Image 1 (tube, rainbow, N blue to C red):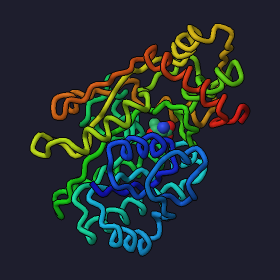
Image 2 (image 1 turned 120 degrees about the horizontal axis):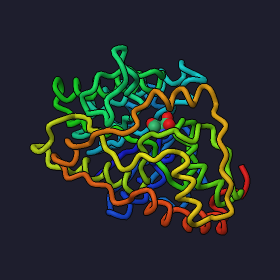
Image 3 (image 1 turned 180 degrees about the vertical axis):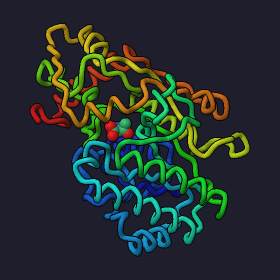
Image 4 (image 1 turned 90 degrees about the vertical axis):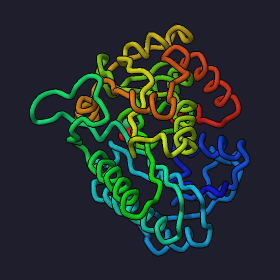
Length: 323
Ligand code: AKB
């Protein structure tokens, strides 16, 4: 299948490209930046694309005529609070440009990556725990606001133009690839810095609990939903969940493999505020029912797989030993 990815230089793109190439798809990866060294192994074509540039998006989509688009380009929650205008341009205008280009270039299917950041505490009281798909959405960040709008635009384009838009609300994703400006990054750095620096001072409280997922499960979820039989799908966007540990439970899990690693907690006001506004857990019953979603990794399973993987990447120089 001919597939195009936007924002391919980010954390998800790193693993998604490998999975799509391994399945034999014809791939065009696009990003504002040139192919990063960490993606050097990945196959397929790489093209520069700024999703805020409507004409450029239209031109490339018309030239490539992809059958399926994975729209990953986004400014994440913490970076988005530092620069709300940029988050609006990339996430909101960028999604509009991608949807319009899909419509004009007659792309059949678009995969949208939404986030737990669409949730926020409703004015009437705390979020339900776990939060269902159809909880009222009260995001507190520009990232969350634009993800809600993106979800609604996907539903609109599906209904109005019959573009088969589908998407998942990702938990915080953990992998060995460097993240870019998310509030859930404390969890990832507990692994990466646990291995390379023997410890980490988290910017979150020890009792912080949000939904998390190991990247191989996240990529598999995207592929499974992208290929699912349309007649089985009852929604445009699905919650997907794996596990929801407290930060100090992650430390305990990592400590099983790295007993000398020291973890401390120094909450950063802005990022802690964002984390506290997100649900502690989400209900993904619809994804399980409609397309058979099921995570393969729990917290300890992820730790056992990821720690040796980070060690190997450090040895190969694929992650810097300091940052
Ligand atoms: C972020 O922290 O902003 C992202 C997310 C949870 O969507 N990782």
